[in-house]
Image (cartoon, rainbow over all chains, first blue to last red; front, top):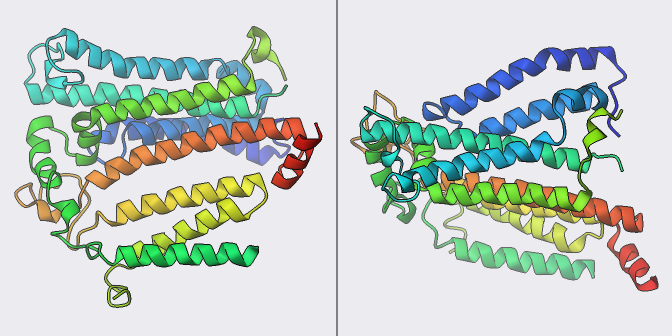
Length: 143
Length: 96
Length: 125
């Protein structure tokens, strides 16, 4: 159902823009501490980038680089990162998802909460990216 | 039948307008939503988490359990779409 | 009583109008895709209602600003409805995705998306 776009200008422009959109998505994830953004917003931008590539370059070229089996696996890895952070805090002696008990050496408790929020946002971003890509691939799969 | 539907919707909207007369005015500083927990979050989030963005700190630290449930919700939605519409075989990466 | 508060609370009235339009689209239209779009409009109206109730006159974005400081919480907009509505947006995306998958399966089975046609073909089988 999804073939390469018949016009050369459209497919070349999308090819040129795609790495910059990916970089902007990673920027939004990591600057979620300082400006509006965070895990959900950055993950959606990453998924939109890969969907743009699928719609403009066709199925044959993009299925080699971003295989359709990857979507749900990435989603599961993201969810496991989130749950794993919570489990590590329980094993270290605190409550579930209490980031001041994370085992980073030599940092004050509020700095540990900073890095805990960063780990959790990366997990959320991977989860949202994988799941949105997997929903798109399931809906446009040929029988 | 179509006019009955439009009349029901207008009646529902009139009930909602009547109920919204009791809400706080728009932009009020001392509305009940702005009074109980959120001044504490604004005052204490920088020194407790060193994160300038208050929304990210509240979403991932003070209300982190709700965000965990929400990530589970979207993962479950992806699993449902996968199970309804069929899975992938090993050689699907090479089709045209 | 209603008209005295019209100028005080105009964002809530706008979101109520959108809410009513979304609900009308869900039960009055016969095409399944249009019902789905009505559900989306309804959910967006709820998000608008909550986010507009978090505004404060004279407040700024809820990100720490070095020129203002944290001494006075009245100078920052209430961050709590923004957080709750992020969850609501993700739930909206999930339900739209699952509904589209179900619509695809219905179309493959009955070859139509009109609800009266679908009921007729279900009774004939």
